[in-house]
Image (tube, rainbow, N blue to C red; front, top):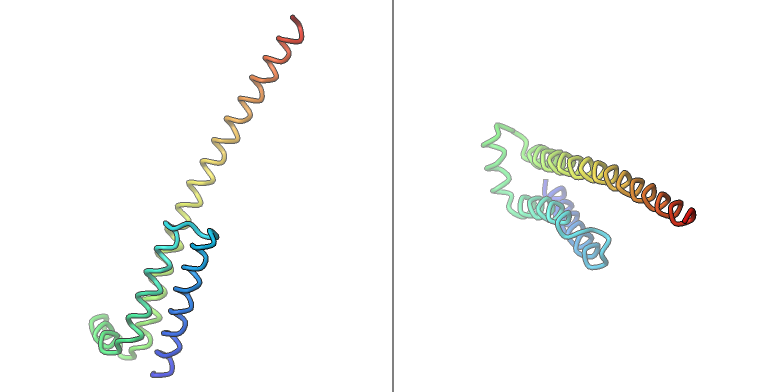
Length: 119
C-alpha cells in the first residue's frame, strides 16, 4: 500500500502543477481549475495521511483502504464531469442564441443596404 500512496502523492502533485501551469498560460480558466485543484488536493491529503484513509474506509464500510481512494476519486470525477456537462450545455445554448442574433443582424444589414441602393 505504501507504493500506491507514494504514487498517488506524486500523481496529485503533478496534477496540481499541471493545473497551475495551465492557469498561468491561460489554457484553462480559473473557475474550471478550482475543481481540478480540489480533486488533486483531496487525493494528496488522503495519500499523505494513511490514518485518515483508514478512517474513511471504516466509515464507508470498506475493508481494503486503497479501494477507498478509488471510490472517492471516482465520485469526485463523476461530479466534475457532471458539472462540465452542465457548463458545455449552457455554452451550446448560448452559441445557438448568438448565431441567431448574428443572422438577424445580417438580415437587417442586407435590408438596409438594399434600401440604400434603391434610393
